[in-house]
Image (cartoon, rainbow, N blue to C red; front, side, top):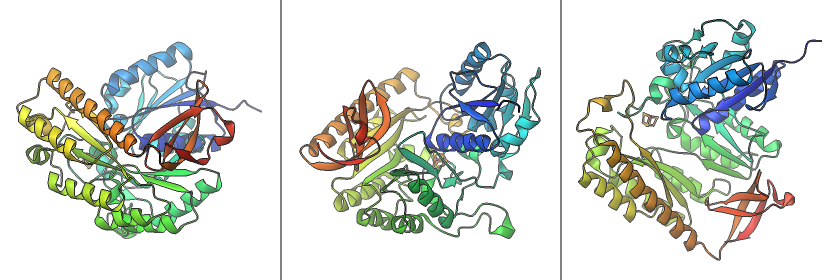
Length: 428
Ligand code: SF4
């Protein structure tokens, strides 16, 4: 009998990419492939790229060079958002054998059957407008928490963003299928599922073509949350990130009344200046955001709220930035994820002036990271002495394990094997 072919993966970017890498890996394991670590020798290496990562190109080249040193005869496959956006550029990287766009990444097994090491890379990619199917994906066995993809693509057109070009139109799994997956994941012992999507709040648009209702809304996010709350799923759910205009009062109320949905929201703000929000083509103003935070904290005073914010967007003056800083300072939020604006090809933001000098972008990033640190300290101190439920994770580093409370406060403690993947009452 021939030895099993081996495959190793490397994922760049977001939770969605992690869930998809995991699904692709299971798919290949079902085809008889044996999974290896990326540092090990393998017959095939798959890199799942991201378009949001700065220097995606550089990172990709670096990884391919590493593979060539490690296993020069192996096949190298590049997929993911960057592969969809810049297939030619990636195909030009010496050592790459196959570039798979958005429509093809889940057909990888078939492509590998036909692939041999050659001089030039094969590109299998199509126009993103024709990508309309939905592939359910989830990560499992990799983490105590499972990322479950329930939605893909985005119909918004934020002026800085390439994701709609890389992932196509908004489309979702069905509630029935998500519930089935959640129950199966829970049955395998996973305690927490993180619902992920590109524009999660837009959940409910059917994939496929017209005859199959494709492109039409058949369900919505509130119905999904209600159904999961009643299902025989895991102890805990988290909502990964949701646009403020789609985080309705009903969703907030449902989470507040739920035993399974954790008191934790991650809500992108991007800017605290209405002028900049307009230039970004976001679909809300700061007043709506403040209302959302207020309602959440009124119903769940202990709720964690994380905020994405972009600094240095074109046209952002010192005054606009100050407005963002003061707004964030005034909000009852727990932490920030700060992104420094960087130019992306084919986005409308490229035409906006004046461009903010790079060193100013970095200064603003630093100021907000300091604010984030203070917010997190304050949030943690507010809960000092309280008993909260902590889910300890599988990863052990230097004999220490970590876990998160229901409201996303990180806890570390010396390794206790009996606590791994357990929810423990913990005094903060
Ligand atoms: S909502 Fe805006 S930022 Fe988010 S994926 Fe869609 S276009 Fe990009």
